[in-house]
Length: 343
Ligand code: AMP
Ligand code: MG
Image (cartoon, rainbow, N blue to C red; front, side, top):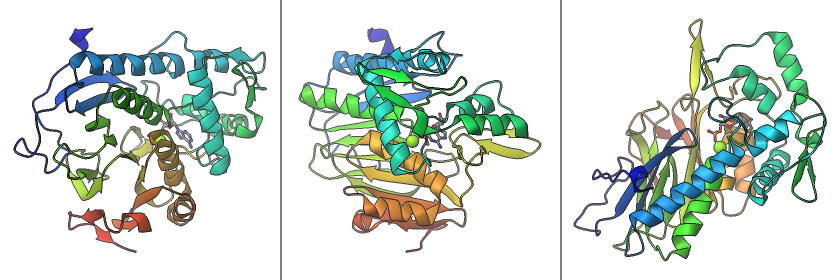
């Protein structure tokens, strides 16, 4: 198992201002999972390689239950659910049931902007796979008609039922958040008071820095280069989750098609935003909301986030205007001069 842990001596590019003078050396480990590189940097005695390996093993278990990638898996619980659509209910683990249940909750809350039954569209576009292509109108129309979270049935005994053949569940928009919440719980239970988890740009911090200061997290620029950031956010015991079109996309005939889909149009969402960052306590909620807000566009997304307790957001528009919610006035500042605070 130890072979999975790759200690890295570099301080995370995202982490500004954490020098060895101000903090003791962390234990750092990374592993490729959930389609990205996961990194954990944890402080204190309980932060052993063994513990971090156990955390990554737990996330590998989550992936093996909930992935819908037929490239990576012959079968998973969710592939079984999707293959049984229109025929029978499938009993899944409490883990998978919980994530799908939360997915349904956010589908309802966001009126389908986040849609946990998006799978027919996701699989049709194939974005992130070798088969990515722009589908024909008829294909899109059929797939759209099969995306309907109102028809997803969560039955007793952890059974999930999709009433029409071709329907399917996809938790790609919340799985990383769930994994981060689970990882944080394991680390806290092991006695870790200070840690930074970077799951492919989705950040979760436990406590503050060991020297007592807040973590300073770089909010990335929406040009896809994770190492460049547009502003700094001070955080403690929080998660910072970002959705953007640059994470996964393909090009056809000179046009880019990205992976966040609008279930109403069937196409990649185009609502004037280039990036959404959600700041909250729970990473799974933040993950669902970042995807939803990207689809909804600035006005509706601002209204939604302001209506939720304990949730804040940073929105970047295609004019490089940055909008933030009230809760971030004291903790977020723009550092890159091409961007301008617009509210
Ligand atoms: P994220 O990177 O968290 O914004 O999630 C994007 C991933 O969520 C995609 O790769 C799909 O697997 C899935 N997805 C795409 N569009 C939606 C949507 N409208 N609602 C829910 N999940 C989506
Ligand atoms: Mg998301």
